[in-house]
Length: 119
Image 1 (spheres, rainbow, N blue to C red):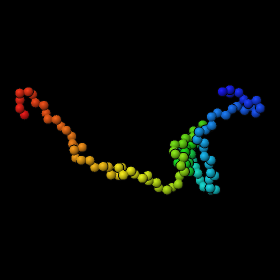
Image 2 (image 1 turned 180 degrees about the vertical axis):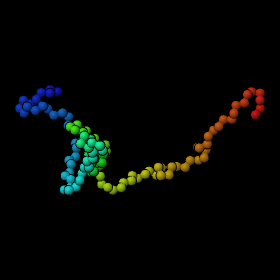
Image 3 (image 1 turned 45 degrees about the vertical axis):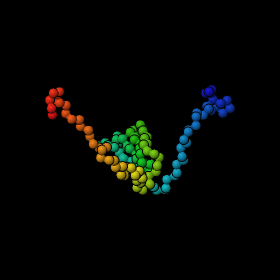
């Protein structure tokens, strides 16, 4: 394609659109804390790196020191609901199928004897 700005608007053409658009974020409840900040040093806290942990999206972390920072997210994009969740187990995981005893037997060959000798 031709990557020149549009003559009328002066803007460059858009790249390929995002295949999975991001869902809009909802505004947090007023007064609800959504992040926890912790200094990661004990001796000189003014120079220590700072970590921010999200309470709303577990796995979202921001680490910063001075003017440098990194944002990291590891998760499925699900909000923290504080509800316990246990996935359903397949019946074969709860009770494996019972097999006949022959399936678990180990074959041990008899020891070899030199020719001409009897065991």
